[in-house]
Length: 552
Ligand code: C2O
Ligand code: CU
Image (tube, rainbow, N blue to C red; front, side, top):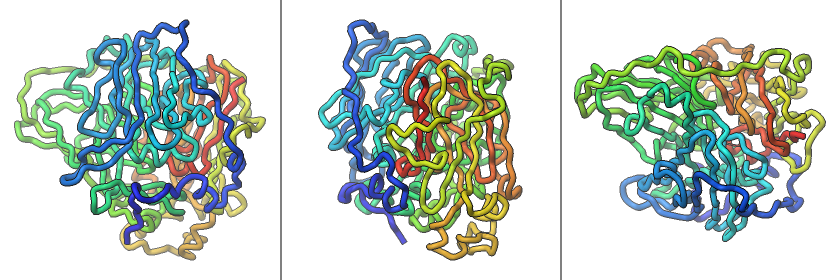
């Protein structure tokens, strides 16, 4: 049963319509969104790097046969070092942008799409007007000029649209790209670079018989997110990397709308993790696998030395349980259920190398906050996630422009303790409806329903009730530290993901699984204004699981 629809011939069913379908009170919707005027270039700003990014319709060859129509970022470097912009001509992905900490960057974003758009520099700490706020959207034919300084530490960041209720479909059509920031601390380590540093963007897609992108766009997509039939890495299916027998740095971004991956090597070689969203860890960590939710990044070292020519190593997404009700994907017709094992890409050793390189013991220094620096130690700011009665809320409310609640006002230059948890409304506690309640091993195969599924056992209608799934929660602005992760629920299911959670580095997106309660510390420095926080399951974001902080 296929529920995917061709994107090209249908209007978008997600967005305002979908939000209405799932019954979210449309606080900010229905009113014309107040827009800010497109920002212009300022004479007072002298950029070190200046580039143009055009959002446009294009065609690219993804599968054999007919080319696929996509929307994509096409870039031109106007000023700056040549490696600041590397076009990826064969894929639909936007150019790889490479900035250095301290650089001043000007980006001219030109909209040549048939609808409004705006771009967000995910993870970069920039002023509100440079952050791609939905109210900054520009119409077809308009240009928005971004000017900001790179304040972040070295790391991999992500640019993508942040258009009101259109983020999911715009990203899905191909608007996404990676940013790499470099700094002195990282350079001193001599990590594998040049051809030995490989950025990898993982996204799932579905295609119709004509090789065109197909999308769910129905109620189930809004509810659970989009899950495609195949996984593309850097815009290609079945990506194979030819490598030399030496160390490589793989910088992986999950650019999928909703799919969560469990990265592991097929021969069970442990993963050497050197960094996450907000840059390098202090010390490398060895993990059997790494969970990577939408918008999360992981920086890996893989050493092929000692492997003979012709040897292959395949990165898989491994089996896991409990992050989404399995029937959710089946209802949407995906052949590739989240939590089943499938290959992502393969590395094949084709060249011998005698380069030997040792990973330094100490990678970086992360400045940790002291308790006395936290403004609200006894009164954490809540981020309550609700997925109930077909509504997507944070802190009990859907996204609304100008709907700032008292707890969302944050004094600038303070550091806040934030608690992120699942809210189960009036429909019972975590025990019965937690992770295990929704999905256990027994359910993976045939979609059999177990007694303790409560409302869900009623079938389709049961899904209208409250339910639990994992949500990747993203906060704009400066990265945060995860200081506590508590879990209460199905230990068996949790055991299939727990060793893949990396909480030691700086993060901007964190996966909050059913039954989990997290504490994070986040600084709100430098810039006043409105900054979004939301679920990075893009269908959830568009359906209203987004709010904003007012830093004042
Ligand atoms: Cu990557 Cu607010 O988004
Ligand atoms: Cu979500």
